[in-house]
Image (tube, rainbow, N blue to C red):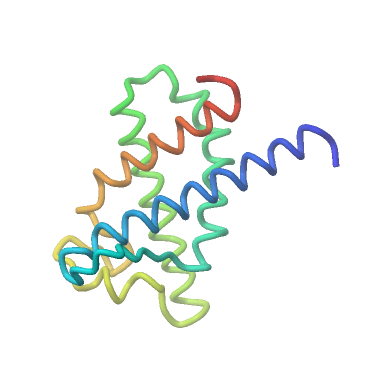
Amino acid sequence: MSGSWTVSLTHLLILTCVGLALEVIFTAVMDYPEKKDLRLKGYTYLWMVPIYALVYPFCFLLYPRLSNYPMLVRGFMYMLLIYGVEYSSGWLLRRSVGECPWEKEYVKAKWNFHGLIRLDFAPAWIAAALVFEWTYRVLRGLA
């Protein structure tokens, strides 16, 4: 494997792990008010590995084009992309395996859209996107 491919694969794996870790932290915090479990057990789904693996290629393609915009504008633009990926991947999972793993929880929420995305999570997705961007910049020596 050539050096650049090794670096790119390493960056992809790191950003995938960042996504999974952020999701586990987020679900632990979001579940606490209902469960009152001080262990703060978080979770994710195995299906999220290939979905979070899209973060690195998207950062690689988008960051150079968005880097001149203010941080909140970039965060909002990334959030729109995240919603598109979340919706389409949830829809594909529903069509291929019969259900989207997160839809049982999302459908209960007031601001869900087809049980595949939650509009009330927009601030969290903006924050996550900016963490992804920062991590990408650090990995690429741009920060």
